[in-house]
Image (cartoon, rainbow, N blue to C red; front, side):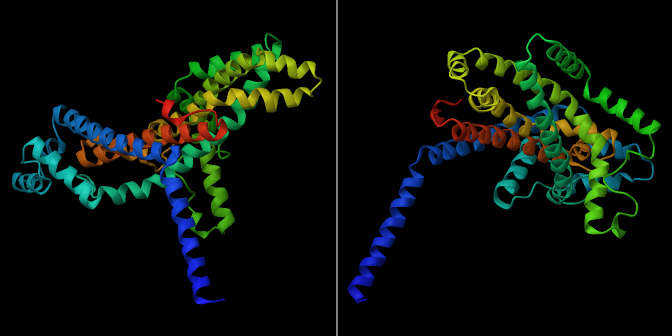
Length: 354
């Protein structure tokens, strides 16, 4: 191959790569993601300012608790006050925190733990995500099939029984469900563990044994998170399927002699899935808030429990970081839902999604 031929091939290759890059950055999906990212920055800024203002307006602060302890001298309290910047006006505290977050990714130091807030969050995030994602999987694996069955068996005994279960599940608050599960665990002890994420001998177990041990401890908190979500999702699935099953094209498909399973799981479910995908985005956003109660009752070492302790102790920077994470998860969840809607139904234009 001659030098000119090699140069021509290289040039064509670069031209092709550049054309592909241009096609990507000008695509509807890429532009939509960029737009949502810019909106997210503004949303996070406003959310952080509002959250900080609410925290500052609430009565008292972390040092007020320390002042009630006679073993802590006023000099030590004043030293902590200066160390955490609590001697400065609220707007200066917020500005200093915001600059550190933007320039260094530093969310400050925890008042209670005297550690970086970021390190505390990274320790707890895996446990919360594990519990919340397992709850979503369990919820969807049960609620979607039962919602489809209820729609297909409309007004029959099966449908009425599932509706009773659904209303009962929605009528129980999460903390009541957790208490009931704790009572069941007490009467069936030692079948279900009720505290922590691992057993005492966890470190001595084999890799498979460690996975099974964590899964064993996840059973009750996962059920506590899943019951209410399962009940609501089942009803929404039933309603969406009933709307689709009444459409003319479903009747046409049945008239053509298509198998009933194909009509239900291919034609009907495919067109009923859109509202369920939107709900999935909101469920992802509620991973943090939904885990509070389960983590508290079952002593699960997650982010929700840490945040609850931070709110109680008025650990400002830890609370701020948790609130920002919740807002970020809401934004990411909505974005994932929009992109998944576009993937499932190419007719949808992202620019029309609000």
